Image (tube, rainbow, N blue to C red; front, side, top):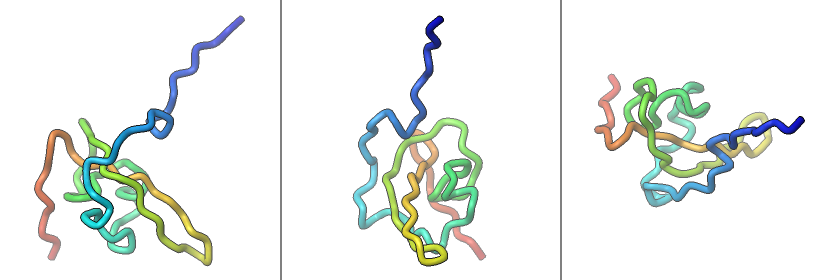
Length: 81
């Protein structure tokens, strides 16, 4: 018996939609934004999304890479007070 396993989003080899220097600083993002649940630009929950790129940050001495996702087709970053 063979099971068809669908690839996860990370396995799709997507091209980033933002250049690396325009990606948000990962130290300013919350856990939901770093875990692909909320938009990395505006902070809203993701329904339709687009791949922004990958960032690396240090946590507890380890370097962690995170894929950032944004609202599709586009969104405007919110101003946080």
